[in-house]
Image (cartoon, rainbow, N blue to C red; front, side, top):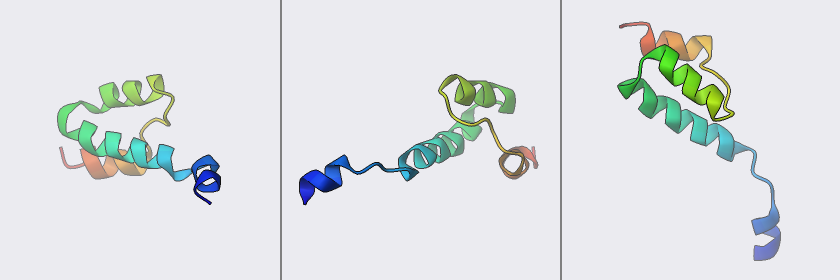
Length: 58
């Protein structure tokens, strides 16, 4: 059973990692720099709702 579970593909890992990067990155980086870093790391760029939420009040 453990072998089967270890071989199972996990789709949420990439999204979780991206979310953590965004949450931490917005505290330290300007929007355009974080966006470039996400794309360079093969993640999706910032979404409009993320920009509005994290950078809208600044």
